[in-house]
Length: 176
Image (cartoon, rainbow, N blue to C red; front, top):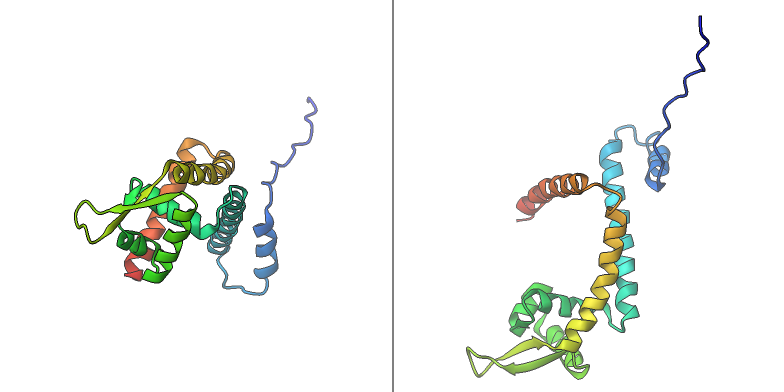
Protein backbone atom coordinates (compact mmCIF):
# COMPACT_ATOMS: atom_id res chain seq x y z
CA UNK A 1 0.00 0.00 0.00
CA UNK A 2 1.56 3.35 -1.05
CA UNK A 3 2.17 5.83 1.66
CA UNK A 4 0.28 9.14 1.30
CA UNK A 5 1.60 12.26 2.90
CA UNK A 6 -0.67 13.58 5.62
CA UNK A 7 -3.29 15.95 4.27
CA UNK A 8 -2.78 19.55 5.16
CA UNK A 9 -5.79 21.47 6.39
CA UNK A 10 -6.93 24.18 4.00
CA UNK A 11 -5.33 27.52 4.76
CA UNK A 12 -7.45 29.66 7.03
CA UNK A 13 -8.58 32.95 5.58
CA UNK A 14 -6.55 36.01 6.48
CA UNK A 15 -7.82 37.83 9.53
CA UNK A 16 -8.39 41.55 9.75
CA UNK A 17 -8.89 43.93 12.68
CA UNK A 18 -12.62 43.23 12.73
CA UNK A 19 -12.03 39.51 13.29
CA UNK A 20 -10.24 40.39 16.52
CA UNK A 21 -13.07 42.77 17.42
CA UNK A 22 -15.56 39.92 16.95
CA UNK A 23 -13.39 37.57 19.01
CA UNK A 24 -13.56 40.04 21.89
CA UNK A 25 -17.29 40.78 21.69
CA UNK A 26 -18.91 37.44 20.86
CA UNK A 27 -18.23 35.98 24.33
CA UNK A 28 -19.62 39.15 25.93
CA UNK A 29 -22.71 39.56 23.73
CA UNK A 30 -24.04 36.12 22.87
CA UNK A 31 -26.85 37.62 20.78
CA UNK A 32 -24.38 39.44 18.52
CA UNK A 33 -24.69 38.35 14.89
CA UNK A 34 -21.06 38.13 13.71
CA UNK A 35 -21.98 38.66 10.07
CA UNK A 36 -23.94 41.86 10.77
CA UNK A 37 -21.36 43.16 13.25
CA UNK A 38 -18.54 42.24 10.88
CA UNK A 39 -20.14 43.95 7.88
CA UNK A 40 -21.09 47.11 9.78
CA UNK A 41 -17.70 47.41 11.50
CA UNK A 42 -15.83 46.91 8.22
CA UNK A 43 -18.02 49.52 6.46
CA UNK A 44 -17.42 52.00 9.29
CA UNK A 45 -13.65 51.45 9.25
CA UNK A 46 -13.52 51.70 5.45
CA UNK A 47 -15.57 54.91 5.49
CA UNK A 48 -13.29 56.45 8.14
CA UNK A 49 -10.19 55.44 6.17
CA UNK A 50 -11.50 56.92 2.93
CA UNK A 51 -12.52 60.07 4.82
CA UNK A 52 -8.96 60.47 6.13
CA UNK A 53 -7.52 59.89 2.65
CA UNK A 54 -9.96 62.45 1.26
CA UNK A 55 -9.10 65.06 3.88
CA UNK A 56 -5.37 64.55 3.31
CA UNK A 57 -5.78 64.62 -0.46
CA UNK A 58 -7.83 67.79 -0.27
CA UNK A 59 -5.28 69.41 2.03
CA UNK A 60 -2.41 68.33 -0.24
CA UNK A 61 -3.98 70.44 -2.99
CA UNK A 62 -4.49 73.47 -0.77
CA UNK A 63 -8.22 73.03 -0.24
CA UNK A 64 -10.30 72.88 2.90
CA UNK A 65 -12.86 70.09 3.10
CA UNK A 66 -15.78 72.53 2.79
CA UNK A 67 -14.19 74.12 -0.28
CA UNK A 68 -13.74 70.74 -1.92
CA UNK A 69 -17.33 69.77 -1.05
CA UNK A 70 -18.65 72.94 -2.67
CA UNK A 71 -16.52 72.50 -5.80
CA UNK A 72 -17.59 68.84 -5.94
CA UNK A 73 -21.29 69.70 -5.85
CA UNK A 74 -20.80 72.44 -8.43
CA UNK A 75 -18.84 70.09 -10.72
CA UNK A 76 -21.61 67.51 -10.32
CA UNK A 77 -24.05 70.08 -11.64
CA UNK A 78 -22.01 70.57 -14.78
CA UNK A 79 -20.00 73.47 -13.34
CA UNK A 80 -22.98 75.82 -13.25
CA UNK A 81 -25.59 76.31 -10.49
CA UNK A 82 -27.64 78.80 -8.58
CA UNK A 83 -26.59 79.46 -4.98
CA UNK A 84 -29.93 78.02 -3.82
CA UNK A 85 -29.12 74.73 -5.61
CA UNK A 86 -25.75 74.54 -3.89
CA UNK A 87 -27.36 75.38 -0.55
CA UNK A 88 -29.85 72.54 -0.98
CA UNK A 89 -27.22 70.05 -2.16
CA UNK A 90 -24.88 70.90 0.73
CA UNK A 91 -27.73 71.20 3.26
CA UNK A 92 -26.45 74.57 4.50
CA UNK A 93 -27.88 77.86 5.70
CA UNK A 94 -27.80 80.71 3.16
CA UNK A 95 -25.09 82.61 5.06
CA UNK A 96 -22.84 79.55 5.08
CA UNK A 97 -23.08 79.16 1.31
CA UNK A 98 -22.42 82.86 0.79
CA UNK A 99 -19.24 82.65 2.87
CA UNK A 100 -18.02 79.62 0.96
CA UNK A 101 -18.70 81.24 -2.39
CA UNK A 102 -16.89 84.43 -1.41
CA UNK A 103 -13.79 82.44 -0.43
CA UNK A 104 -13.87 80.33 -3.60
CA UNK A 105 -14.35 83.43 -5.74
CA UNK A 106 -11.35 85.17 -4.10
CA UNK A 107 -9.26 82.06 -4.87
CA UNK A 108 -10.36 82.16 -8.53
CA UNK A 109 -12.18 78.81 -8.33
CA UNK A 110 -15.62 80.21 -9.20
CA UNK A 111 -17.14 83.28 -10.77
CA UNK A 112 -20.55 84.76 -10.20
CA UNK A 113 -22.41 85.73 -13.33
CA UNK A 114 -25.82 87.30 -13.82
CA UNK A 115 -28.49 84.62 -14.11
CA UNK A 116 -29.67 83.94 -17.62
CA UNK A 117 -33.18 83.35 -16.24
CA UNK A 118 -33.52 86.20 -13.72
CA UNK A 119 -31.20 89.22 -13.81
CA UNK A 120 -31.81 89.85 -10.10
CA UNK A 121 -30.03 86.56 -9.32
CA UNK A 122 -26.56 85.19 -9.93
CA UNK A 123 -25.29 81.88 -11.18
CA UNK A 124 -22.14 80.25 -9.89
CA UNK A 125 -19.72 78.99 -12.54
CA UNK A 126 -16.76 76.72 -11.90
CA UNK A 127 -13.55 78.14 -13.39
CA UNK A 128 -10.81 76.06 -14.99
CA UNK A 129 -8.67 76.64 -11.88
CA UNK A 130 -11.55 75.43 -9.68
CA UNK A 131 -12.14 72.39 -11.85
CA UNK A 132 -8.42 71.53 -11.81
CA UNK A 133 -8.15 71.86 -8.00
CA UNK A 134 -11.29 69.74 -7.50
CA UNK A 135 -10.17 67.10 -9.99
CA UNK A 136 -6.64 66.76 -8.55
CA UNK A 137 -8.01 66.27 -5.01
CA UNK A 138 -10.65 63.86 -6.32
CA UNK A 139 -7.98 61.75 -8.02
CA UNK A 140 -6.33 61.04 -4.65
CA UNK A 141 -9.53 59.48 -3.31
CA UNK A 142 -10.25 57.68 -6.56
CA UNK A 143 -6.83 56.06 -6.60
CA UNK A 144 -7.33 54.76 -3.05
CA UNK A 145 -10.83 53.47 -3.82
CA UNK A 146 -9.47 51.62 -6.86
CA UNK A 147 -6.52 50.29 -4.88
CA UNK A 148 -8.77 48.84 -2.18
CA UNK A 149 -11.64 47.59 -4.30
CA UNK A 150 -9.24 46.41 -6.98
CA UNK A 151 -8.71 43.22 -4.93
CA UNK A 152 -12.24 42.24 -5.98
CA UNK A 153 -13.15 40.94 -9.40
CA UNK A 154 -15.51 43.00 -11.53
CA UNK A 155 -18.31 40.58 -10.64
CA UNK A 156 -17.51 40.83 -6.91
CA UNK A 157 -17.54 44.64 -7.09
CA UNK A 158 -20.92 44.53 -8.82
CA UNK A 159 -22.26 42.10 -6.22
CA UNK A 160 -20.99 44.28 -3.38
CA UNK A 161 -22.59 47.34 -4.93
CA UNK A 162 -25.87 45.49 -5.49
CA UNK A 163 -25.95 44.21 -1.91
CA UNK A 164 -25.24 47.66 -0.48
CA UNK A 165 -27.96 49.14 -2.73
CA UNK A 166 -30.44 46.66 -1.27
CA UNK A 167 -29.55 47.78 2.26
CA UNK A 168 -29.60 51.47 1.32
CA UNK A 169 -33.03 51.22 -0.32
CA UNK A 170 -34.46 50.08 3.00
CA UNK A 171 -32.61 52.82 4.87
CA UNK A 172 -33.80 55.50 2.44
CA UNK A 173 -37.43 54.35 2.62
CA UNK A 174 -37.43 54.30 6.42
CA UNK A 175 -35.58 57.64 6.68
CA UNK A 176 -38.29 59.06 4.58
